[in-house]
Image (cartoon, rainbow, N blue to C red; front, top):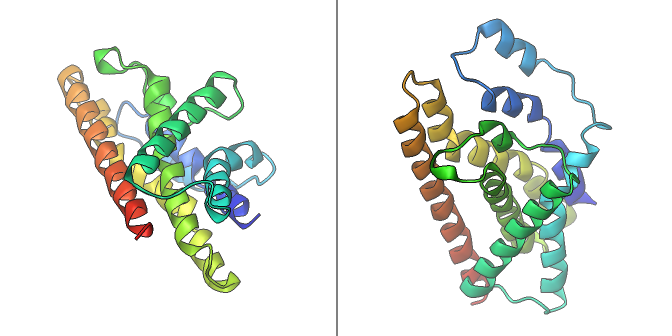
Length: 205
């Protein structure tokens, strides 16, 4: 329940991410202020709250019953499962469109659904590591550790990892910058997945 509440809190910046990922020119301050002051609707945000947190919770449950063991290989396989899950629920329309979907079309013919799934799966992968790390903490400590995590991972993945693509879209001749931005974003995603996988491998020791 705590993780799902955290997932819902993570949707607070959803209007901002949508605004940022649809930009093709420098935004006016008035438009940015209007987005930042959009009231948070907890009911409307419910469909967006579970797709990132729930798969991580399932892995934590498997870990507690020793049906899943953290490690480099199992971690990478779990990331592939998370990516497939994000692709599936996106194709079935079971989650609202996530910010990366507004970047279409992408260079090199890369499907935008795949990039969105990779970014969302990385968020889930990071949450999985956090949940496993803190699942034996006391409730107050667990609450402090878990509640901000979905929001922080969104800021990191959408705001920092996706920054090369976002900046490239604002440049006048966007063909080559977009290609470079996409390559940098994919490299940063791989780096992030490698760090989380290494962290999971250390939990096994």
